[in-house]
Amino acid sequence: MAKLILLMLLIFFPALAQQTEQQPDPTGLSLLPPLNDKNQIPLLDNRFRIDYEVAEITLVFFRKRGSASVILVKPDGSKINVINASRQGVDWYDDQSYDLIKIKNPTPGPWQALGQILPESRIMVLTDIELQVDPLPAHLMVGETIKVTARLTNGGEPIAAKDFRDLLRLDVLFISSNNADFENFGAGVVEVTSFADDGRNFDERPRDGIFTGEFRLQMVPGQWQPKYIVKTPLYTRELVQEPVILHKSPIEFIATPATAEGEMHLLTFKLADPEINPKSLALQGKIRFPNNEIQSFTLGEAAGDERVLKIVNFAPGYYKVESTLFAQTNAGRDLVINLPEATFFAEAMAKEPEPASAEASDQQATQTAAAEKTPEVSQGEPEPNEGSGPPWTLIIVLNLLLLGGGGLAVWMVMTDRTFKDLWPGKRDQIDLSALQQTEMPAAKTSKPAQKNSKSDDILELSLPDD
Image (cartoon, rainbow, N blue to C red; front, side, top):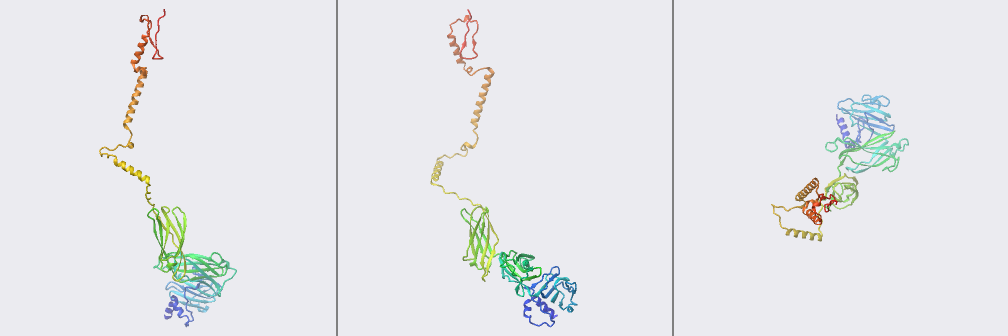
């Protein structure tokens, strides 16, 4: 029982294992090294592959409490269990919830583990082929660009096998620790990036077994566990590092839109992370105006933990600001952080009245004086307004004249009269003068005088023939 308690302490508290590492084990079973920061072989569907370079392998299978010990199936189909393990030179310790197995010079090829195995099981290798990755900084922030250097070595030297060096790739994953105290609880696995040992992008030299690259931390803030995987036709290695805390973006935005014509919009960048040195704060980015025009800007180092960006009040609408932060931590680590986009809305400004000129002022004064001399109109008799309605009196008079003229024309047509028939005094005068000029006796007149139909001014007088 004491041995079991000691073994469990050594598994889950690596520091204790390091302190007791040099103590001999009476059973001959080596103490389990820390699970993190060790090269591992991936376990997929309870299957794993051991390459020929492995000199020693340690397997820890966690299973449901009370379930039977696992059974290992070798590449040749033979089986190893807790009963026949010692006859095959395998060290095996089983408990109610896990199996601890160590195999020297294992058979290369595909292996399989049978049993109710939990996903947190580990397969650690002890060999000259190792994957080494520099540890990440302790204080990480969302949007930060991180540089990573990883090495795949054989006996401490870069692997230069021609048959697979062109296919070397390093996959970087971040696994949520599923800690309910953090925002990323239940976020699962995020595939961050993949590097190739081809000398392109940020990789310094091709096919040297050293991966150098950069990636941006765009995950949800919280506790994450970094995991690195190298897969080749000959080797597969995994490296799981200690969990890290990813903090939220270190900058808060405060937008102050302009309130009057001619003012500037203000966007304040306020430092919210105490780990950053405020004196080293510098910003660079672009402003996108409502009409989609773009303007670049730079805010240099200054005193205080705020930087203020002045934006021209170009037009009402949405203003968008993309920016990158350049700074240093209090410990002197350089930072490059891509900040979230800042957006604010600007209302339309009311235009101020323009100052009146001297001539306009004099004209306004004259109009004011004339208005003062104009007598007031009583409330009972409103002042007439020419444009207030149609001139009804004029319309009525015109209609009467048209009706009268039309009636007169109809009457003259019906009675076969002319306009001169309307003045009879003139017609009688013309007839008398004509008679006075005629000296012939009326008795001899055999025909009455006839009216000339062609003219009203001349009378035709006919005399009888002798």
